[in-house]
Amino acid sequence: MEVESAASNSNAKNQRRVGLIYDQRMCKHRTPDDDYHPENPNRITVIWNRLKLAGIPERCVLLNAKEAEDKYICAVHSKKHVNLIRKISSKRYDSKRNLIASKLNSIYFNEGSSEAAYLAAGSVIEVAEKVAKGELDSAFALVRPPGHHAEFDEAMGFCLFNNVAIAATFLLDERPELDINKILIVDWDVHHGNGTQKTFWKDPRVLFFSVHRHEFGSFYPANDDGFYTMVGEGPGAGYNINVPWENGQCGDADYLAVWDHILLPVAKEFKPDVIIISAGFDAAVGDPLGGCRVTPYGYSVMLKELMDFAQGRIVLALEGGYNLDSIANSALACMEVLLEDKPISGFSEAYPFESTWRVIQAVRRKLSAFWPTLAHELPTKLTNQKAPPHILPLSSESDDEDDEASKIVSADFVAAVEDVVEPLLKLKVEDNHDKVTTASTLWRSELSKSDIWYATFGSNMWKSRFLCYIEGGQVEGMKKSCSGSMDRNPPKDILWKTCPHRLFFGRDFTQTWGPGGVAFLHPQSNSHNKTYMCLYRITLEQFNDVLLQENGPDHDLSSPLFDLNALNSIPNEGSFSVEAVKVSPLND
Image (cartoon, rainbow, N blue to C red; front, side):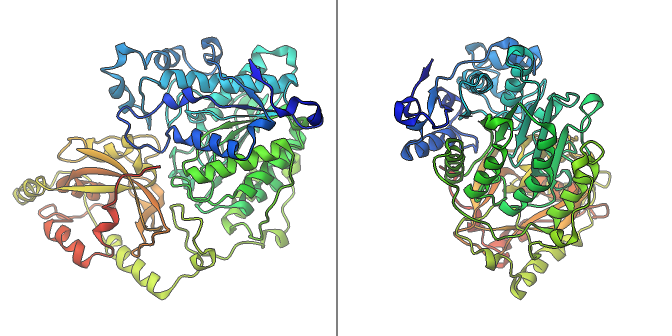
């Protein structure tokens, strides 16, 4: 069933027919105890309310969400995985639902998860089929949970079913009469679409393109899958294109340079029949997880340039995006482009980072064997147009931050950085427990009685990774195995919080993660800055063991690295007040 809007009346005959799906039933998927989580129901309700305020639904064809059939989902996921998601919200799973979720990577379940997952996948199928049939010119599926991280046999990264991959496979395999033979999937979510990549790894019918923060494998999902050397295999070789950012803070100029010099030339050669966009808005300005700076104008231009292909037959499916203002404004900007009822407003005078040109050239060289249009070297005059070097904070920052000021490295800032970094660079510590002595036993006994909040950023925010420091072991993306803590009890509590600080790189390598660096808080707080963190409540003994595993081989275990005296000195002598982390849990 569809609800005709103003797009169908006689006064709007020439207006593009744009489909839109939103269903509140997808809001039933939430954390089991209503604890805060970045992937929450407010993400889609705030977009819907913003679109309504702008009068967008009245200009669209509103479609009803419907659940995907198992046979279509099983074309992308294993039967075991589909059965789990179908049953996970049933009463028989009440007692073990949380345990199952804890064994997965960044996943939660509740009584509404199954229905939401089926509706999300079914909604993307619905709009994709109508666009492929020509009943709609384009469409936006406002869905959650997102999908691009979900793999064949595993939910991960907030994603239960891979909605985009399911819809693309449906068009190619289940609707041959529609003559859809080539699909371009553009994933502009700030995280790599690992699940989508693996689905079409050997399939030349799908050109998968992902631009994302990668930072040499240290940014989520924290592996090598998103590197530019991953180009596909067999008949699919050359049909997988990754553009991996080396740093955060990439903005409009960086993304548009990638469009101009990689994506658009390849799309012109590929000639897709339909384009599906994994439309995550976590690369947007102010996103707490993404740390990039794409504006609504930037998303508008990226989408507008893609409308020159596939006769403008484009489907957007919501993926990530965790700053409510940013995702609402970005989604609105995209809907206005699809409707083509107003010119794109805005401009960008910035240049790409030097690292952006370096990545673009590396991608072009790697893919030139498959796409001749990428074979020529970019002129030096072009690649010399780059943003001035400046320290790149890791976390996203307020829209109100003075961009020019952020490029100035003051003497005070350098001194503050050195004060924090130098002592840590000199740490030489042990990653095993062979030297445990009587003295070690004494300090461990004392420190085991005190709890601290250990704040994590980036890959260590995800519980399965952090637990390696406590329980021992190794997960994907880690360069070495952790020995674990002497006290292997799990964290007593977990909180998601913001701190009024920026982050910056203090080191460019760690023992556990390899290249990628360590994040440090800027010593000075600013009410406009927001760094998003996950805090684990562990003992001071466990905290010392985390430091031991993270830093190096030669510390004498007869004394702790960080004792009660050091803890008690922080309020008076630390680089920043402990009040920085004494904030209420994140709220919307």
